[in-house]
Picture 1 (tube, helix red, strand yellow):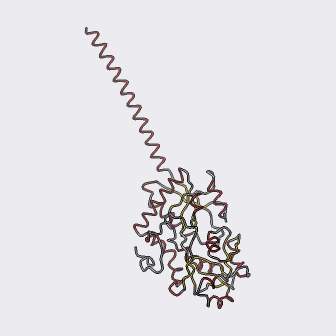
Picture 2 (cartoon, one colour; picture 1 turned 90 degrees about the vertical axis):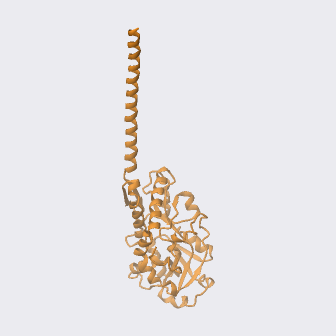
Picture 3 (cartoon, rainbow, N blue to C red; picture 1 turned 30 degrees about the vertical axis):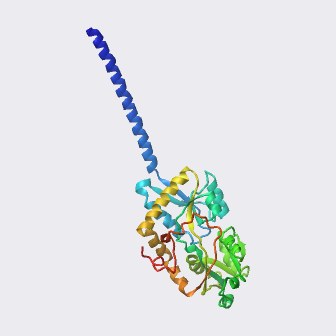
Length: 323
C-alpha cells in the first residue's frame, strides 16, 4: 500500500516538474517575443524624401521642418527616427511616383498638392502641411507687361494671358479646366527664363513661393517683376504621402498623430508663421483683387470643414499666429 502511494506521489511529482519546465519555457518565449516587439517598436524609423530640384530651390524647407516636428512629437510612442533626402537631385514627379510604387524605391515619403488620382496611388495624411496657402497665387510677370495687368478685374480678362507651369504640376489641370492657356516647362529654373523670353506671360506662384523665388532668380532674370494687384485663389492642400503598404500605414499613423498634436497645441501655426510670415506680409492680400476658381481635382475627403487646418487671409484668427 505504501509503495503504491509513493509511486503515485512520484507520478504527481513528475507531472509537477514537467509543468514547471513548460511554464518556464513559455515565460522565456513570451519574454523574448515581447523584447523583440519592444525592440522593433523602438527601432529607428528612416524617412527618405526627394531632394530639391536645384540648389536654388527653397520650396520644401518648411515641409521637412513640419515633418521633423511631427516625428519629434511621437518619439515617446514610436521611437527614434532619421530623416534624409534622396541622393538623386532634381527628381521629377513621375520619377517620385515610380520610386514610391516599388518596395525598394529610394524614397518613402513626399509632399505634394493632392488630387483624386494621387490619393488612389498613395496614402495621404489629410492635414494640409502649408495650411492651404499654396492655393493663393500671385504672378511673376515681365516688367513691360505690368500696365496690362492694371486693367484686369475679371477672370475673362485674365484668360487673355498665357500661364507657365512645370510639367505634370497639378496646377496645369486646374488652370486649363478654368479656361486658361498653360505652357509647360520641364525644368524648374528654366521656367523663369521661359517667362523673360516671352514663352508665356504669367508664372503663377503661391504667395509663400513668389517672393523668395523672385529674390533668388531676379539677378539672372532682371526683367521679371511680381504683379502687385491680383491674386488667384483655388483650394489646393498639400499633404505628406506614403506607400499603401504595412510600413507606409504605420508611418502615416505616426505622422498624423504628430501633426494632430501640433494642430491642438498651436505649434503647427507657430511654425507656419515662422517660415511664411514675411511672404504673407509682402503679398499684401488686402490690397489685391481676389479672383476665385474651383479645383475639380479635389478629393471629396478633403477636410474643408476643419477651419483650424486652413489659412484664410480674411479671417483674423486664421491670419494671425494665435491659436
